[in-house]
Image 1 (cartoon, rainbow, N blue to C red):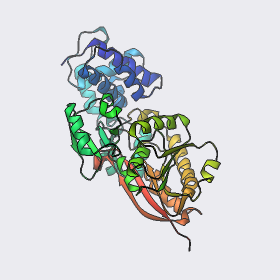
Image 2 (cartoon, helix red, strand yellow):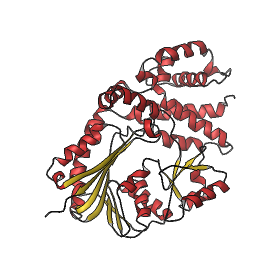
Image 3 (cartoon, rainbow, N blue to C red):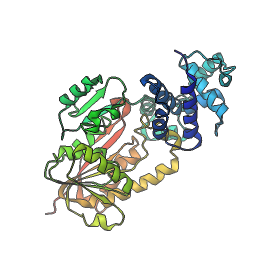
Image 4 (cartoon, helix red, strand yellow):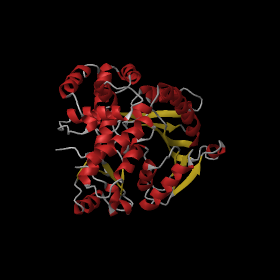
Length: 406
């Protein structure tokens, strides 16, 4: 087990782009993995996992290394040295790693790990907010779970095949998967692999989608032939799932504020063989008004803090600001009030977020039900999914039904 200079240099360059230039970790990692065609799968795995690890534990490693932002290259090397010592790598005799104080690093790790915000490597404000909203006990478990790397979960595209046939296809490619209890379309990868390079992916046999995220479309209770509106479709993971549950029958309207996201969705839909989707950019209020009381089902996958998906997006711990959460709560109230009008009497609405904060979830729904439009809805049920209980992303979903006027 030794460190290779070119892999470590790429890691340092990538950390500089994420920490100092504000780039998104997933984009930086994707770029890093294309850097050298000679790298094997273990080389790429080292680069990707090391970048994500140091991003995930940034605060802890910076405190141990006694460095402060903005990090210059020496600071980044010191943080890398902390990672290497704690992971048990022998420190090579490179100029940048000279004089790495191994015993001091281990001692500081033990000392600093007594403070939760440092141990779990999150900003103080986030720790305080988590405790305030979930309570000390639940938050402690939840943030620890959010620091575990995310598993790779596939969702079978049932427009093109079954979970069993997909499993066999992947087995032929030496990609082993396991079934997930109570998840009709999910397969879990036994070991991480770049499934996007497989012909099975290019043929649209599956999408990569977290197990808890896969529960949202089913919760909406769609049937073939319905008119369904996904109001915050984005790049469309849940839209594509809804299309497959509708068996391409009926009308599925995918809406978003951003044309670029809908373009991505179009490409994915083509690959998936999902052809009952219409695309609408929300560029004026008229787009919503035209659909008032027209839909059997409406999904509001609302913008949120993303505090349920930190294991998947560890850099968002550092990008997120308390003001953003205050603003996003206002946006959630507005979209719930505005988009709920699309549901026809007797139709159903699901409000969902990938947050674990009650102020973005249950409290938003309770507040909505007291509004003028909200009083036309009945609360049916909700589901609060914590990473600490499920092992997957944190999610919330509430099912509401619009009353039929007498």
